[in-house]
Image (cartoon, rainbow over all chains, first blue to last red; front, side, top):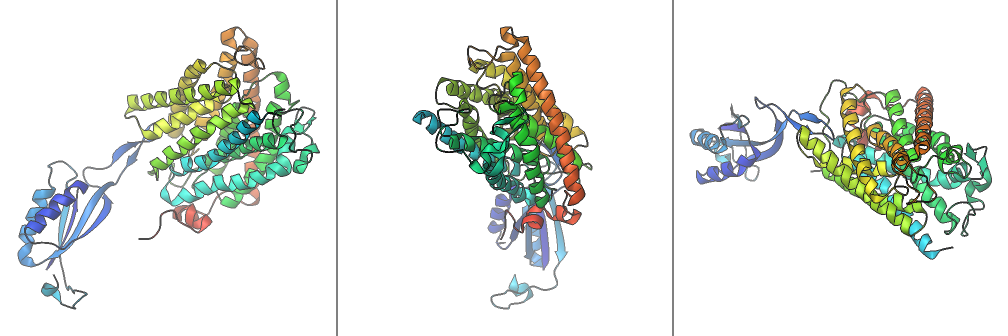
Amino acid sequence: MKKIEAVIREEKLEPVRAALEGIGVYGMTVAEVSGRGREKGIPLQWRSGEYMVEFLPKIKIEMVVLDEDLGKTLNTIVTKARTGERGDGKIFVLPVENAIRVRTGDKDDNAI
Amino acid sequence: MSSGDTAWILISTALVMLMTPGLALFYAGMVRKKNVLSTMMMSFGILAVIGVLWVLYGYTLAFGPDKGGVIGGLDWIGLRNVGQDPSSTYATTVPHLAFMMYQGMFAIITVALITGAVVERIKFSSLLIFSVLWFTLIYCPVAHWVWGSGGWLAKLGALDFAGGTVVHITAGVSAMALALVLGPRKGFVEKHPMEPANIPMVALGAALLWFGWFGFNAGSALASGGLASNAFVATNTAACTAAITWMSLGWIHRRPSLLGVATGAVVGLVAITPAAGFVTPLAAIPIGMVAAAISFYVMMWRSRQKVDESLDVWACHGMGGTWGALATGIFASVAVNSAGADGLAYGGAILLAKQAAAVGVVWVVAFAGTWIIAKAVNAVIGLRVKQEEEVVGLDISQHGERAYGGL
């Protein structure tokens, strides 16, 4: 089992979700987050002059997948979330110790 | 007594009342979300407190029978001799009670205007005490000087149709003095980003201010008729012109922002306030245009200083009111209002000098008086919240509630 944390553009959530569904990967938790990378902040208009917003709105997807699904899942996210411009986001992959399905008590791979 | 005038003054009174909650929304949308409620609470608290003090003693200090040109006597304390019959001095076609309450709404919003300077860090209890002192020691006397029968600035011949000097200069200049005594918000000098919580709320507040301002300015004719209509048209024209001007200046620098249009409209309304019943509707165009340009660049200059006059009450109301008072000295015409005078544009230079004198006097009195009151309140109970209270936000630390809660 691997945990994927993907920070992507807001408008890329729906293409990513649909494409993952197409390859049989359904489960995910999504949050609206603020972040920054090489894109840095942007200036917004104050009443006169402007102010910097250093953190931009992004979507963070968290999901745990079976080891054998990892490659195609990552591939799908990268393909669907990419624009080629700064600010496309990052993906992190982490090992997972245990997983439990709350409804049944199923453990680990059976819980995914 | 005129039923038409009475109806108009009662409606205008309600319109001006609505401006203070409008101001609450206008200001609260521009602070960070942890301080939205506290910012609104300042206006609502002042609405409640001054609303009572006005009937108890404020009205008689400002409008009571004159004592030496400087203050009203106590003949009307607690509304003694203020009843359903018209006053023999003010608005003689409407019940004295209606005139009294109409003026009370001006007192309320003037005090509330100041709060924009001190949001996100002033202690609520201290703000209320400051407000009571400021209302008693600054607002009531200045209102008497300019509007009271026998007031010394009125006798001098300075014109102020609806409160450019009494409301906007006093509030704007006092806001600066109070902000200087209080000091900047934590993180202001370091230029930490402070993002406005809710710009639609600012726009709604500006809309309510604009709507209420028809009562403020056209109501100041104190009668329903031609002069009120003149003031009404001048008011709307100035607001629109200033909004366009502000939008254009923002566009030149970067983008035409809604925050800019909302601010511009308010500045135009401020500037036309002293002039609305003395100038032609078309004179509102240069008045609104110049007001927006002045406030826009003064605000830009102020934001580069280390002075955290947070929501630019001084740049908007102090500057807009000052320009409006001087513009009255330029554009006023007896053809519009025979109770006025001819300004510079109509060959009357003396009016502009009188306007400048009134502006100067009120600037000095408002700044010095507020400085002293603020220093005194600060010395006795402290003006500022504790640092950790400021960090967590005033909604929680001062009022024990939050604007946007729950999952």
